[in-house]
Image 1 (cartoon, rainbow, N blue to C red):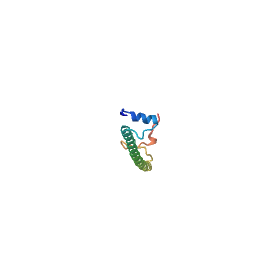
Image 2: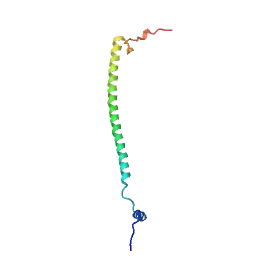
Image 3: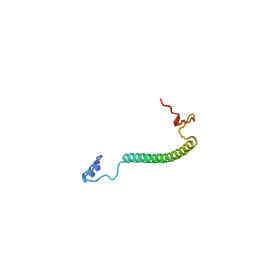
Image 4: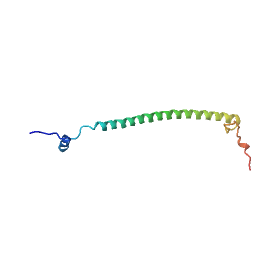
Length: 99
């Protein structure tokens, strides 16, 4: 009795017997790996951005503290810390004229 091979026959037999595939296709595996790698790279970049943001926030807090000290010095020296930062002109509150 001669047997002939028909393309896809073993797959159909496995389906009929309830045999499930053991692994995904190489193309599917490559696509999943590619997307997972992209997700991981995005997480790494996001972590880098968060770390940079954290550093910038510390730097900003330091500069705000520095500005606060300067404002206290100005207030002690001139009675106000209201200064035009472009010209250095002091804006005293009592210089406001009534209409």
